[in-house]
Every structure is written in structure tokens, then in C-alpha cells.
Length: 279
Image (cartoon, rainbow, N blue to C red; front, side, top):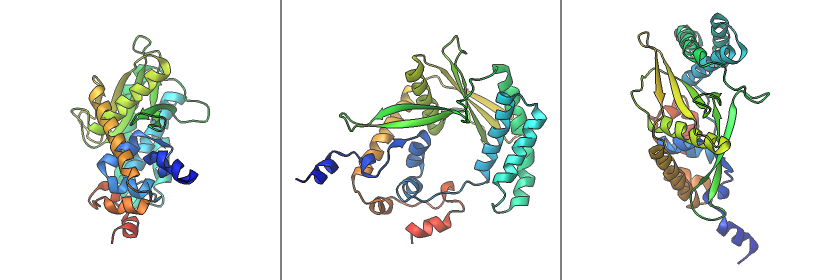
């Protein structure tokens, strides 16, 4: 057996394909749309952000100006709309989308600031960064090659809240009002809680603030109460991902083995990418 084959034999699936770390969004995408995940992370294709994602980013940017920089609400709204215009400049149906989304962004920024300001000032992110990064190793099997690093980013972190145990708040923008934790958001909340606990030794409270498009009751809070079921689902998905990646060292083989679902929102406005892989 050559040195090259020996080295290859002990590599895990992530190493075989040059994946050095994972994220919650990466894992959730693998579970929800494995074809889009494979095309992006194995094929190297890039999915452009659509109007919904740009709207969410604009709202977050406006809220951050109010929470971290102390700007008044009207200034935060103006900056959020500027962000929406800048990022949507080259997208389709620009004038129509801007007309539709400007009042939505305005409402979401105002509601988010109203809900977040009473919590006080969160911990400032490191200089030059928008958010706090957190990391934790995720084990998918025993042995030296049986773990991979995860990295995530916190929207707002209040380390002194909750009697010193800390509070994590994540801001979501959506048209749908959640009545309970979705699997994807529950995994995100649980993993971030586990990562901060590993960093600080204290288990923080985790809440998600959903700012909605509707006029009546335009926001919803969800608080994480039991992380264990979500952590189990998360770990199982990581194990399944690694198993899949070990089946072949040829990315094309894995991409072609996964079913393609063109109805998934991930493929909206991505027909050019789909045509490269699925005829």
C-alpha cells in the first residue's frame, strides 16, 4: 500500500472533498435541498441572493445601526432602504420589487427596534466584524478524523442577561408566523446555545424574534426550551452527510446520485446552474 493510498484510507468524507468546516445553514441546506447543497459545496456553483434574502439583510443592517450605533428609528429605516436599493440594483423587476418591499422593510425595522431596545445594548462584535463568531467541534464518529469544526454567527449577544448566563437573540424576517420551532431554526438555536456554553461555561437563553409582513401582530418571539431533540437531529444529519461524502471522491458522481427538485425555492432564478448538472 502506497503512502498516498494510506493517507486516503484514513480521510473522512469531509476531508476527501476539501471541506474543512460546516455551518448550521450548510447542514440545514443538505437536509432540505441536497441537490442545491451538492451543486454549491461540491460543484462550486454560486446561488445569487434573491429579493427575499436581500430584504432580510437590509432589515438586519437597519436594526444594527439602531442597536449598536444608537441611530434613531427614522435614520435606521433610511439606511435599510438604501441597502435594499444597493443590493437589489441588478436584480430582475427592480422598480416593482422596491415599491413593494420598501414599506415592508420600514415596518420590520421599526418593529424590531421597538422589541430589541428594551433589552439594552448587546455586546459589540469584534472590531471590523458585523457579528460574533462562535465555533464548536462536531463529532460524527470516534477517532482522530471523526470530527469537523462548525462556525456560526450571532445576531445579538447579551452576556450579562439572564442572571449572568447570557441571552442570544436572532432576528428573522418572514411572511409566515411560526407557532413553534421549525426543525431548521430549532437546530440553529440549539447549536448556538451549545457553542456559547462551550465558550463561556454558561448556558445562555436563546430567543428568536420574527418580524412579519402582516400589519396585525407583526412580530412573534420564540424561546428555546429543549435543545436535545434538535441536537440529535443535527448530529444525525452531519453523520449522514459524511457517509454520503465517503461514497465517492468524485463530486460529479455524488451530484448526479441526488434527486433534483426544481420546485425548491433554492432553484428560483437558477436555471442556468441547473442546466449545467441536470439535462
